[in-house]
Image (cartoon, rainbow, N blue to C red; front, top):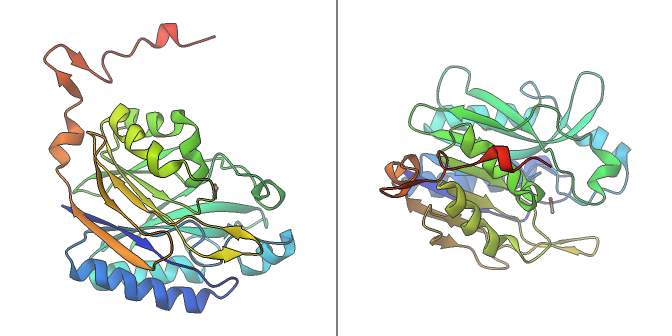
Amino acid sequence: MKVAYVQMEPTFLKPEINYSKAEELIRTAVDRGARLVVLPELFDTGYNFRSREEVLRIAGQIPDGPTTQFLMQLSRELGVFIVAGTAEKDEQGKLYNSAVITGPVGSGYIGKYRKVHLFYREKLFFEPGNLGFRVFNIGIAKIGVMVCFDWFFPESARTLALKGADIIAHPSNLVMPYAPRAMPIRALENRVYTVTANRIGEEFGLRFIGRSTIASPKAEVLAVGSEDGEEVGVVEIDLGLARDKRINEMNDILKDRRPEHYSL
Ligand code: ACM
C-alpha cells in the first residue's frame, strides 16, 4: 500500500484557493499510486487567526460544510482515502481544530477527530477536542488520527496504537523544529507508520517548518519534505511490519507493557 503527504502553503482565509491547490497535489499523489493522502492541519483556512470571530466566519460543519464536501467528492472520484485538517464549527457555534477522514465508499464521509492538545493561541479560538483519539478501519488499514501538537504528548500515539492503528495520520502546522526528529521515535515505540503532513510559509510572523515526514516502525525516515516547497511524498509501506508488535521472540511492545507501574 502506498501512502502520501501533501505539503502546501494554504492561503489565509481563502478556502477555494486552498481546495484547488490541495486537489492538484492530491491528484499528483494518486497518479503516483497513493491510496491514503494526508493534508496539513487547517489546510482550508490557514492557521494564525487574529480573533475568534475570524474563525467563526470561516469554519464549517462536518460533514455538511464545504471543506468536508469537497474532500468527500474528491475521494469518491479518485478512489482515495484522505485525512485533512479543517476548522470545524458545530451546531452550537463551538469551534474545533479538527481533522476529517474521507474515502471512496458510500457518501465518502468516514469520520472526524477534534484536536485534543491545543497549541498556544489556538486556546483563544478552539475548544479542546472532546471525542478522544480515534482509529478508523478503512478495510485496507486501520488509520489513527492526531493533529500537530498532539505529537508532544506520547500518550496520543500510544493510545492510537493501543486502539489498533497501523498508520498514524498527522496533519500538522509545525512551528517548532522537533517533530521531524521525534516522529520516527513515535513510530518506533508504537511500531506503526506515521505520516506527518506539514505546511510551509509564514503568517503574521509565524513561520512553518515544512519537512513533512513519513516514518516506519523501525524509525526509518522513508520520505521527508523540503523546508519551503509545495510537494508530495509517496512511499510504499508494509502493513505486516506495523501489525507485528514483536521486536524479538521474547518481546512484544504492547503485551510487555506494565501499566500497573505507570500510574502515579
Ligand atoms: C501546532 O500544533 N500547530 C503547533
